[in-house]
Each structure stands twice: as structure tokens, then as C-alpha cells.
Image (cartoon, rainbow, N blue to C red):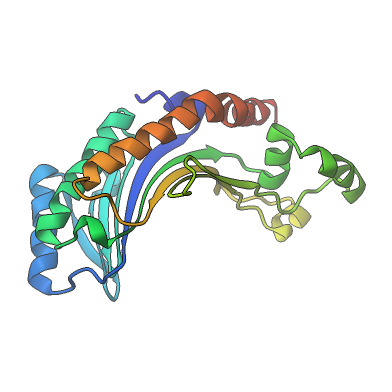
Length: 247
């Protein structure tokens, strides 16, 4: 069990590499790329096309952990839900990125952005927006507005983004996704959809000469993990857990 599992109902760690140029789309290249991934992870046996130009290889849904890789015209994604550790997921993403220069002809110049995202899902059958506002609070200028607006919060998805460096090429983004509708609030019939917390660290622009994708991914993953450990767990995840437990 990873160190974040006790703070949410489901934890996952995803990687996205966006390119400036189109990735190869011919049949032989795509199949060979996914065959190389399958050699490293034999349990990934489910290959399919989602839409034109988008392909995915994943483990069977009942495999417990959800390991998957997808390829789009200008984006490569890799994900793992319920990883044994952050390192476990990071190793998967690095293994995928190691194939990129040789199988997809992507160089350090062709990087538009490289992202690592930690996702935390919470199961709560109720008003997600109201729950979030209660758990993490409203910023001071809006507290009075919340009191005047009535009892039902309908949309509360705060977002903050900041840069780690002066040239703003490494950025961190904290976002929330609530899934409660006004109809559900009116009717009192709430769905089983989860409330999600996303922490993303992103490198923008081409990589420096001599810098490879796996090394850059490990760098931004360390930054993401530091924010999660030193801020997110105590200030966001634990308050959400506590508030849900009281409902």
C-alpha cells in the first residue's frame, strides 16, 4: 500500500507527454510500440482504439491495479491506479518514456510539456461542492458571501497555479473536480460519482540538450511529492476525510 492510500479512497499517478509535432500514426509503428510495453508488463493485454488516432493498452479491469498507456496524435499518456508506491508508478512512466526516442522518434526538442499528476478520489454521496467548502473553507473575502447565499453551494472548485522557477517553465497546479449537479441538490438524490483532487507538476518547453525524458520526469515527480507531503495531505486530504467522516 502506498503512503497516500490511507488519505483517500483511490490514489493514482499519471504522466502526460505532449509534443510539438504529430506522433507516428502508421500501423506498424503503433503496434510495435505497444508490443514493447507489453513485454515489460505482460498483464497489459487489452488493446483498443478509442477514437480516430487514439490507441490504448491496459490491464483487464478486474486486475486490481489499473495500469494503462495511451497514444494520441500529439500526446502520450501513462497511468497507474493503486500503485504500491510512488516509485512503482514512476518506474512505469520512465519505462514508457525510455521507448519514446527509439519507437516514436521523439527528441528532447519535440517536448511541448511533460506532466505528472497525482489524483485523489473521495467517495461521497452528497453535495460535493458543499463538502469541499466546509472541509477547506472559503477565502476570507467570500465567507460573508457564503453566508448570504443560503445553504446550498452549487459550484466550488478552487484552483491555484504557481511557478517553481523565474522563467515559469516548471509549474504546479492544484485543482478540484466536483460532480454534483443542481438537479441532485434539488431532488436530494445524489450519484455515486467521486470528488477528485488533482496535483500536477508540469515542465514546459523543450528539454535541455543532454537531458532525457525519464530524468526530467523524476525531477518533477520529486517536486510533486514534496508538495503533497508538506502541504496537500495535512491541508486538503485529511480535512476532506474528517468532514466526510462526520457526515
